[in-house]
Image (cartoon, rainbow, N blue to C red; front, top):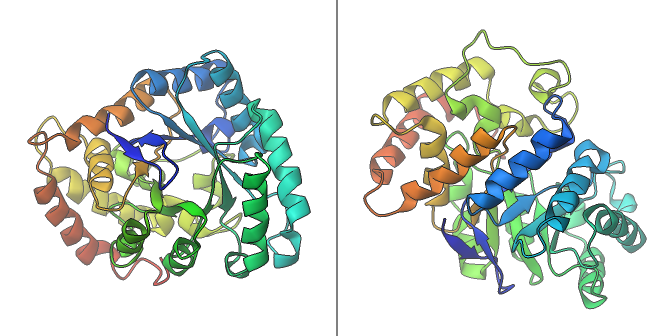
Amino acid sequence: MQQRPLGRTGRLVSAIGLGTWQLGADWGAVDEDDALAVLAASADAGVTLFDTADVYGDGRSEKLIGRFLASRPDHGITVATKMGRRVDQLRENYTEEAFRGWTERSRENLGVDTLDLVQLHCPPTDVIAADDLFDALDRLVEDGLIAAYGVSVETCEQALAAIARPGVTNVQIIFNPFRLKPLDEVLPAAAAAQVAIFARVPLASGLLSGKYTTATTFASDDHRSYNRHGEAFDRGETFSGVDFEVGIAAASELAAALPEGVSLPAASLAWIAAQPGITSVIPGARTPQQAEANAAAGALLEPGAFDLEGFDAAVHGVYDRHLRDEIHPLW
């Protein structure tokens, strides 16, 4: 597993990380033993970045990670959490007092004195534009409550604004073979500024797993049922904002372009991780087997292991045929 610099922090994190939204049970129920097994499988496979948030299961995801890490004192894992979605998304609800309260809650959930990395969780654009809030984040670093901070964003414009902030360590953005706009400006700007990029929703909520058909259904408590049109939060977080049937057709075409023995999810994760400017890809996993398969995609980054250039051509061809007019211009 490749280990890459986390911005200017001096830390290294794995090219394939682990997203843990699903461990909060927002993708259907995941019991505690299964969740802990996913964390263990990922760590054993060389994953050194766990991404979570204080709202995943109302803190359940953070608490499970805290339990797991306490059982492995020498774990070497960086935990990136997020804050800001516990309130209505208004500029006035983002204050230093709120930051300190959210940070304290996450420290307690994770069982640590200092949080490795805290990201503002897809805040409104005017929050990213607020100098005083980034001054407040700097004070949290000075006080030893957090080691570093970043921003998770919905749009490329927000990403560029966050990258321009001198104290920002990372930007987290949706990026996958269905969402290519970050290639144009975001990734080059991040590389130039030494800001890490975490690619989230890398498998388009499972569309790029290659397992779904137009007849596939999801549980009622799975966001892939209740948020297809943005009913609960930004539509782009579910299937990358792509219509389900369009996504199935595009995924099928991508899968057909792969050589025998290379799966579509592995190819997709490796392709994302290979893009200049990407620090880590953070797919989720609900089983140890999925976690191991995701981590194994890192091996495709080795020279000669996989025709990344050929797959890149397939990605751009499928995007032009199926998705260019489907994706919202801001994405």
